[in-house]
Image (tube, rainbow, N blue to C red; front, side):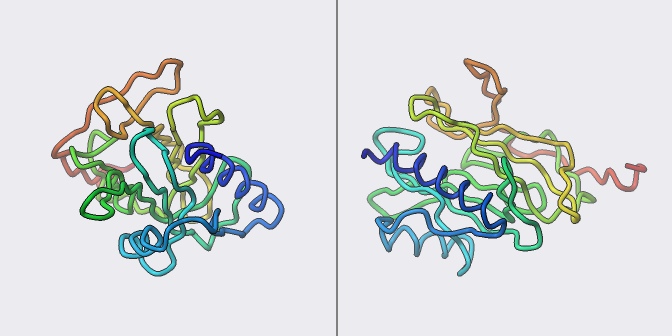
Length: 198
């Protein structure tokens, strides 16, 4: 099995466990290098879990998809509750983060913020629903993030993120075939929507 296929097998395996047990959130493969696991924990903390490892976005680079489990919300079909995620790539100098989605609308790649036009300083949310939208290894890797409310209900704002081979970055995209990718925003404005009666 090639590395690209490994992540899909691992994700499908996780989904099966999540549906069976609700709160299961386990490492997907025993063949994940120890250095990769250490890098994920350095980026996200000691509870970080590597959901996938291998040629995720490209055939040339080894990448890892890691997350922090949002323990207050049960997993369901199409929703892995996470607090934060990172995608890391291995290089000659070790593992580096090439995409991250964190609290306070910190969703970005090294070139800028992804999928948002502004940062709402009043928007308090516990995490995201993660849904792996790519179903075939032949498709560009993509996933969806839906902002969650504290009760576990989706906020309605859903972002599709995918690998753009033209610029070699993970960017916001439309859910079409083929998708349209959106450029990053370097310095999005901060807006407190809550004070406007959101």
